[in-house]
Every structure is written in structure tokens, then in C-alpha cells.
Image 1 (cartoon, rainbow, N blue to C red):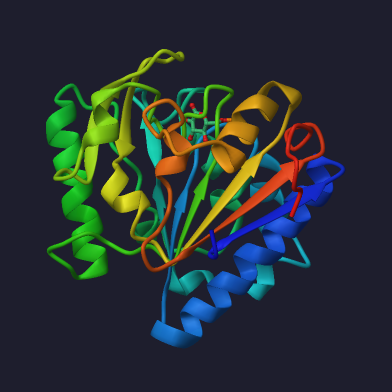
Image 2 (image 1 turned 45 degrees about the vertical axis):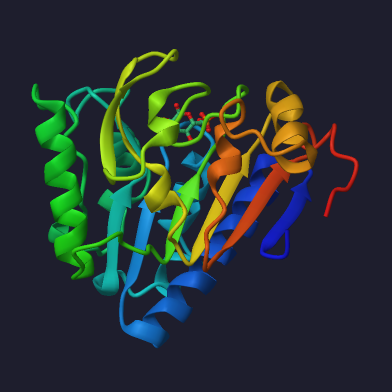
Amino acid sequence: MQNRHISVYSSLDTLSQAAARYVIQVAQEAIVSHGRFTFALSGGNTPKALFKLLAAEPYTSQIDWNLVDIFWSDERCVPPESEDSSYRLAMDTMLSKVPIPASQIHRMHAEEKDRDAASQAYTEEMRRVFGTSGTPAFDLILLGMGPEAHTASLFPHQPSLQERERLVMPVSVPKPPPARLTLTPPVLQAPRHVLFLVTGQDKAEAVKEVIEGARNPDEYPAQLVQPTQGDVTWLFDTAAASQLTHKA
Ligand SMILES: O=C1O[C@H](COP(=O)(O)O)[C@@H](O)[C@H](O)[C@H]1O
């Protein structure tokens, strides 16, 4: 695949530094080209180190945070103060420490009882910010991947993998907490850039299948992320990349 880049790092620290440099490069290019940087964050633990770096020097002052809009690729259906909240993780490690206007932090209100309405509200919020009635094209979507190749909250064999109309939808997944909202395949196929951060031996087999195996997104949902106009950058640590035949 021509628009795919792979790099392998010896530690989470070096991987996160490379990720920080990449985010800054994409942010600066987006701001020069169209005056804003639209950035969808992942949940999970892997991006924590990246978030901390982006909130500190020498990285933080290289981004004009006044021109950044933050969204999420998925969210757990818990209150925003919960330890399981992806919003809270990003707030605690990065967003509360950088000069971004609060109105440009667009969290999923996944704690609402009516999850269809919360999904629709997030769709409308994305469309409002992007000024489109169609599918928003993020400058950058940050994603992780689980040991069974799920990404965002798109898990193997779930109906969400076939979704082509909705941009955000509620799902029930086999990983706690099970109730989530997630961006759907059309949004994950539309960005200018995708950055995957994947670490750990437990993901090595899934990495091998997603990168070098036959196309089977029903089994390996991360394979769905192939932007029609954009590129995908995968940053692995040595353990996650250990089963790859070609490491770049
Ligand atoms: O459930 C989730 O897991 C993935 C991977 O998380 P990690 O802790 O292994 O980095 C994450 O990307 C996704 O947003 C999250 O909801």
C-alpha cells in the first residue's frame, strides 16, 4: 500500500517522541494550508506519553493551540470525571495544560442515557465545526489497536464494521466498559492523516495480520482504516512489531 508508513522504536518513550514530532508537523502543515488543525484523539493507555509530551516543551509551543479543534475517535459511556473516560485522560495529561480555548474541545457526551441522540449530537457538532453536511475529513486521527485488532471501538464481527450511513454510533463491545460511542468506518476512511500507536507483545500477532495478512476487516477491524485521500502512519515498539517480516 503506497500511502502506508511503518516505523519501529525500541521504547514507548522514543515512539512517543516520534509521534509528538509527527503531530506537530501535521498541525503546522494544516494551519498553513487551511488555517486550522482538526485532531481526533484515541482512548486507551498508549497515547498517554504522547499527550504528556505535547503539553510540555519543546513541543507545546510549536502548536498554535488557538487554531486546534480536538475530537475523539471513541468514548466509553461513563461520566467525564470517571477514570475510564478517554476525555478525562486527555484533559488530565494534555488539554488542561495547553492554551486551547475550551470551546474547541469537543467531547462525546457518551454518559447521556439516550446514546443514539448523543451520537447524533456528536455528528452535528463535527459537521458544524467542519462546515459540511457530509463526512468530515480530519487533518489527523490518532488511533490505537487492541490485541484482537479492534480500533476506536470497532471490534471484530460487530455490525458497526458495516456501517456506511451514520458517522457516530453506539456500540456494545467485549472489553470493559462495554458501552461506547465510536466514529464509524466512513469517518475513519476520510482523514488526511491517520497515526496508529501500537505497543506490546500481546498485539504482535494482530499487527502481523493487519499489516501483512490477507484483507479481512471483519476479523481485523484496523484494516478498515485506509483513507481514500490520505495516509496511514504506524508507529510500533519492538515487541508489537516482532512478528513482522518487513519492518518498514
Ligand atoms: O478500547 C480501546 O482500546 C484501544 C487500544 O488501547 P490501548 O490501551 O491498547 O492503547 C484504543 O485505541 C481505543 O480508543 C480504546 O477505546
